[in-house]
Picture (cartoon, rainbow, N blue to C red):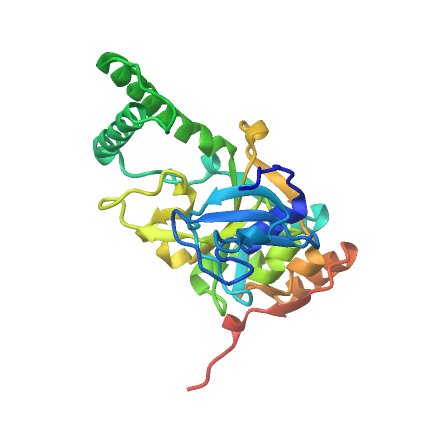
Length: 319
């Protein structure tokens, strides 16, 4: 078996993110526990291969034990919407950057939660047993020489560390939220604009959003899962992709990144290609007619070429 070189490049990381789920030679869909072999073919093309095809690699950069993503990727043409006040829109186009808020600053106190407080004893019992078992049964080639008391002490320490790291992760996880829908949502207009008369929605697609972020391998984009926390826990390494079922109406797609050196900041400004991101701009159903010209003037000032239109929800019926 080839020795791993660990010579990562940005483009190789992008390739792995985009070909995470299957062997790029034979198409085998990986399942949990499979080994994927990432590296270069003899012609220096990238490849992510299963065990049977791994002999084709001339250089193995790294091997992974396959784990399914905790989130689902939307279709490339899925429409994404971001509803905002006019002031936030001006900030976006003037800075040409998206604001990723720290998870610790969200109004939802369950952001990144593993479960509800009155079920933590169940969680702790499970992971305490998990740590005890892991200490007693080290990897092949190692021997556990700890006493029962030492094992219990170490398992308790790891459990406490797990709890404290959960709080720290809220400060170094940064998120930008979108609504997935083929059309406008009246509820989203009302929920995400303080002044609905001057509110704006920008519409993009998953593909445009991904490419507008320059396919950044440090940023994950996916659908949020909605679960009943009274009956189950969020995964230990994927809790930011899970929210309470009471938020299911949001149909959220989020972009998320980890930044450990910014653990005390409210958020991050991440550069974005506006020409690629913004496909259409919609004005609030209750926006006055003069607001159209204001938005067009601001777009001209900041060289935004996207089409501006009134919300379709402002159309009048006949009976």
